[in-house]
Structures are given as structure tokens and as C-alpha cells.
Image (cartoon, rainbow, N blue to C red; front, top):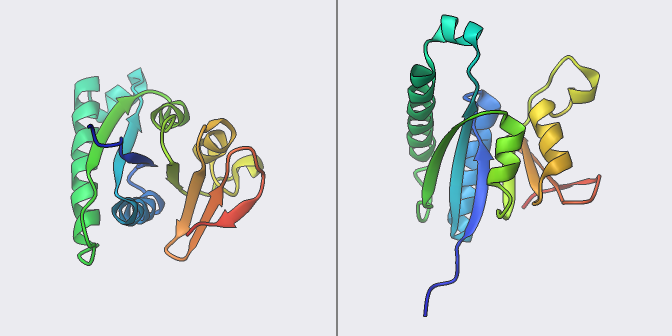
Length: 163
């Protein structure tokens, strides 16, 4: 008889301090719940971006390299993990919120770092998190810092502390 499918947690990574905090939180959560962790970095290409930062191939390679470096660093920062979770690194080109909600369609949690923006509608969580909160099929966890984690269950407007 086949083993039951593992649970999956998806975490968005953009290289910011907030997303790195979210990555460490998601690694701990995946390890404690025997879940697979998908670490997702989204990137977009545009002629102006390509002129400044290189070709699409270079942007893709940079995304993969950033994913590898940040996952290794996060695991090194968590030496007391009882077990290391299985981690899949996913680099995809496209709109971040759409990719994250698609990747998390069959997940138990979508984990994001909180970002503040100047736009008042995005002031608390940022555009990507706001969009994910509206469109995610699973609960969304917003990691503000090491001590503040909010869980938004599907279909509810209230935030509750995540365990």
C-alpha cells in the first residue's frame, strides 16, 4: 500500500528580510508537521529590467541561485531542527500573487513575509499578500517578524495568531 501523500506548505521568497523570516518560520513548521516545503521565488522580465539586470536567462539563473543561497542560509540558522523537511525550490517567471496561489492550491498553508507600502490599501501587508489573502484556496500565514505571526483562514476576515 502506498504511503499517504505528504502535506505541503508553500512560502514566497523575494530576498527581503521579511521573506527570510517567513522562510525560517515555514522551515520550522514543515519540520514539525512532516510537510514538504515549496520555496517559491517569482521573477518578471521586461525590456527595461533586462537592460539593467541582464537577459531572461540571467534573471532565471539569478533566481535559482538566490533560492539555493537563502535556503542553505536559513537551514544553517536553524541548527536545532529535529529533522530537516523536504524542500523543493521553485523559480517561476510571472506575476507573484498568481503563481503563489496556484502553487498553494493543494497546500495546507501559504506563508508570506509582511511588507509595508505607501499605498494605503496595501499599507499592512503589501500588494502580493493582499492578493493572496483574497484568492488563496488555503489559509495564509503572514509573518511580520520573529514574534508576530498572523493566520488568515479561508473565507474569514479575522486574523488569529498562528501556532
